[in-house]
Image (cartoon, rainbow, N blue to C red; front, side, top):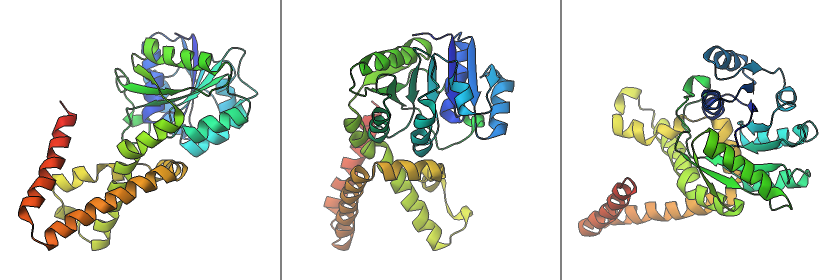
Length: 282
């Protein structure tokens, strides 16, 4: 699907990038909305959008595809307000890192036939339109979740086609619950661990000059938007708690190896971890 009109609600790193790339791909009309006026102005001046709306409902009224690029709680709230204003035949999607609660809410609102969940694996700890890029989404994997309603597959097909044919991404269909369980490990756990590490180090009261590149790199995700991540972690809390519990077991294992001065087992522990990390990039 290559729409002639697109609405993007939220013009931060993902929403701004999506709008910008759609414009460069030839989408003639891209209507943007941002709760932060400066972001909207930046997007307009850059050419990422063709016009700005004062309210989300104004942005959504005349678009073939409406993309919600806002945090999960705001997405849940917007689903209700946009249900009655979509143009005939228009589809609605999102970019949130948690899918099952959003899919469930869309179905409860009677929007199951016109909504499909989306999640591009192209996030960043940076925020705002200044972190947007017309190249950010090109080639990325994007998960697509059907609602399971009678015509939900058509909305999912339209959203997948938009990602593939307009944004040059690689859509992958996935069950919403399976998505959330997977992301708890591959995204939400690393984020939570970065917050924990930064909090523990902050409690030590050490100055910024105390930390080298390794510590800063390891804490990079802790620079992410807390409002966004509080939504994600709470909405996916059961799966994240399970991941944290197993991570705690790993820390206890490492602590025990150090307490017992078991160098051989410690080397094995570290080599297994190193091998996994190196293998990811192969």
